[in-house]
Picture 1 (cartoon, rainbow, N blue to C red):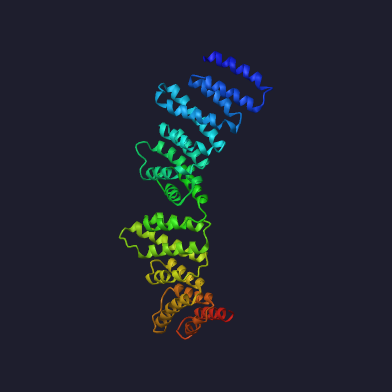
Picture 2: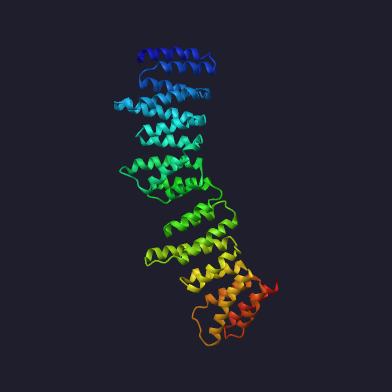
Length: 390
């Protein structure tokens, strides 16, 4: 069929379409497409075909895409290649609109058949849209490889990664979440990283198991972001607390001489302690790492927040840790060793008051007889009142 014949047929068909039913219109365009020879003709007809918004056309669209994939190696000229790409894109997006799950294998074949990154990305995106779960593992592996190495053409790799992220957002799964998370922290442009960050917000209500694995295995900067992602998720509070405790332990027990890494581990500890405070944690597992954070005294703000976290914890075990530290301060003060900065002592007193735990009463009472200033003694009496009001 030449172009002139196609135009005459299309004009005649438009007159017919005025009175025909939707199914008859679709059938006519289907026949015209099947009679078309050249790719530009097929593209023009397909644009009219998909406009019919007829889900019954899915088998026709799949057949058309299958034939295009088979013919892909025979497409030579630049014009034909462009028409082939646009025709595939048109069909792929129509299959996505119709949620044609049965088309998943064809979509992946189209992804493999083309070297055009935009078509590859759209094929992946639609695979997610139609829930082509049989291809989740392959797409996850593809994104993993892209995360590790952009290859020779970073621009093309970004476009394909964007499609992977779109697909995995819908396909979900722990392994998929992990790679989309790494994409949000990876080498990509802001647009791709922002898209990945957006995707992980909806991929899992409780990603804490995956994030715990990332915290164990990754560099300190990534550990901080993994903790933040877990705290921002919809996971149960106890799972968030467990993640914060793990992060705090990592920040305490990992040793390095790298100054930058040391600062990142400090940020990890601070974020973990802040999370325990915000979550109002009374976890027994948090007590020992909080005690260590106080004892090691890496940073005054970190130390004061660890004291506050123990005060919020309020358990007998947490209260005993605080009493030990305040007793040490009392002994130093009574022996004449005056500290120029009283913030730590004040934090301990106030935290013990917060616990409202009777175990704190003796050490708070001792403050009055330990040679402190009247202002500090007044703070200790206020803390005792909190306990008495329990």
